[in-house]
Length: 226
Image 1 (tube, helix red, strand yellow):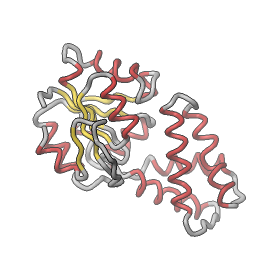
Image 2: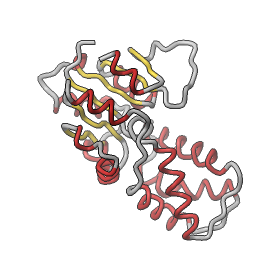
Image 3: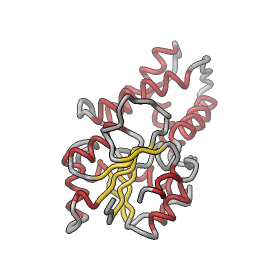
Image 4: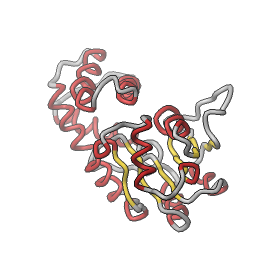
């Protein structure tokens, strides 16, 4: 790949969102005396992922996620609690928890010595900045592309247009997008002409991997590609 700049996703690419979210929800559950039943985290993952997919499809807003997430989780788990208060405290706790994915700092150190590196995220900017700083990763970035600043979410062409405009005169094909989401990160980038490296965080298997230029199951393997 003839690469001159790197865009990289944060959650479940550099920071382990699942581990961070589990820690945050258990802290808040203790505060509100909420007792989660067996299998609760799988319910959280399914509902949370569904809502973020709807956001990526522009079917809902981020505010809709915050209003619906814990209400839908509590309804399915049969829990009676103040879902709005739980959501607010959950996001507050999440801002202070940063669990790096294995190899994240080593990869960023390597990339930042060769290319300018920019985050590309749909999550809250203050939350991502605080968490990256806490994990010791923020220092490796040349800048941040956050959907709430741009006004459009990944995988929209408008999001990647804004990134490429900021990186002009680099061409789209000289920029690589690294991320765990096939739809938001990889297909979104490819549709705009960027190169892509899919990080297979969940070790999913596909019949074909032609949706991405390259794919890895370990972050360290990216060093063998660019």
